Image (cartoon, rainbow, N blue to C red):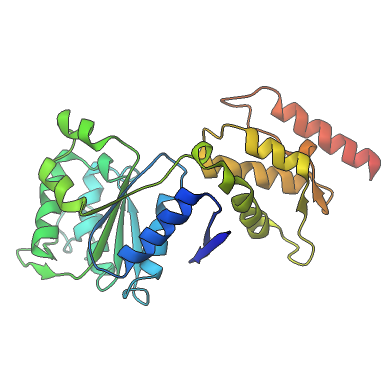
Length: 278
């Protein structure tokens, strides 16, 4: 059975039994208000799964706010999370309430939580325990009501052993653990996901190309070290190269940067052939 879940313009599709079970488990935990910790390789849909949980929760009509803890400089992350008062530091020309308060009543996704500086983890733990935040430059604690979801692609036991992550914070976050799988471990999902991606990226919604059996075989048999993100890139290339009716095996080009050779030449060759035949 094909299960397709749409969440805020993000799609998850599954035919693999493990993926279907994961979706059902996510929808069950969504009905509660417990903190969820999602672990899995990069590109396996952790953020989309987080949005699925939000969409199926009692907080669905409130905000879903996501912050990537690895993408924000350490000296800015505290202010972004908890807010700051005007003039509390150089450049703070106005006050900012921070994303905890922006997500009040809704869901806060702490993406790549394992990359959060150890110096900031104690303040996050306190905010979770007390359900309140204190903006930088303020002495006032402000109550917040958020459902927290955290994600990582790291082995958290090793991160704790190495002193990179607080054990008490980990247990505060790891109330309900979920794990996403690599695409190579759920090959039955590859074609359903590809179909969703084709529909998402095809400009002409009235004439969506069909995946030829030869193209399906290529997709199913590739290792997909970059998981769904890599698959999405391949599908977007295929849509550019296809004749608009069918995506053939010749339109499936794997990125040569890390794993293969010659994809740029292959793309150029395909475009030249199209120009001649056109």
